[in-house]
Length: 325
Image 1 (cartoon, rainbow, N blue to C red):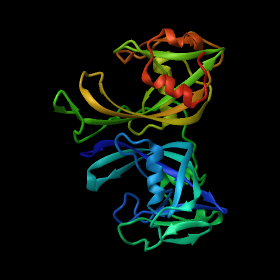
Image 2 (image 1 turned 90 degrees about the vertical axis):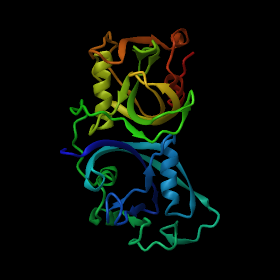
Image 3 (image 1 turned 180 degrees about the vertical axis):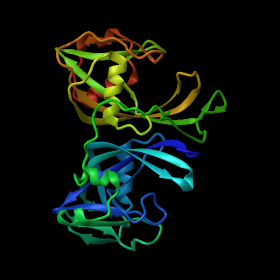
Image 4 (image 1 turned 135 degrees about the horizontal axis):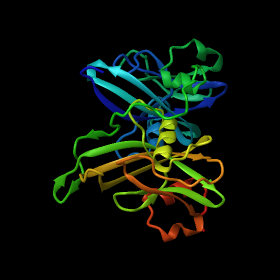
């Protein structure tokens, strides 16, 4: 990578299908993919839920209110950005998005296959240009990489197994929050986590730092696919290999906390949640040496209340409709 620094960010995009067409936006000449068409969306800001980011990206080109629904894809790409001296890994989260019937206040629109788009977009200025393309035209467009994959127009034969890169995936930003009168560094991290059930028990791992039990999983490494990160993390934390996984939802948490190094941070984590399967119920064991996990176990759902749990567990189970009675 030469003198380029490794960076990572999360981008939330909206998949809007209407009247046999798909809404795409064309990046300006100053954008990261100049001249290419992409699904509308925006970079996830610190502390923001990705659904909000996807919605904001759509509102930049349409006069209609929108609602980001279920997540459809979690995809990675890596690009060299010489002007920023960066080798950037972007995790793209693509949400099915619905349009409301109402037009937002002050939105002057033009019609496009039933979709009311904002006026005044020439496609050559600094702002992005939005357009609805019929499905038959999509194969002939210059598309961004993640958009082509999401629309099924690019071969996606990447293996679902463990990744091989080991660059640090944390992205930092200028200090903002305060702790004991001192500014805290902002850190945003994206990770993949598995909800794995067998015979009324949930597979869990224990964090060595505070003894709390959580879902097995962890950070997506630089250049790694989210699904590959899930396979790798499950293997490291439990010693077990997955037999299939299904992308289910996205969780976001923003809090002040202490990192494994002991530094207090203004921390934002974006969790990619999968439901996964492991044949039978083999005994788990931690294989990672010197990591953050010191134990793994199958825990009966009725006994979750008897263990110290991370703040992520209850939220994830609620989002996925798992009852722990």
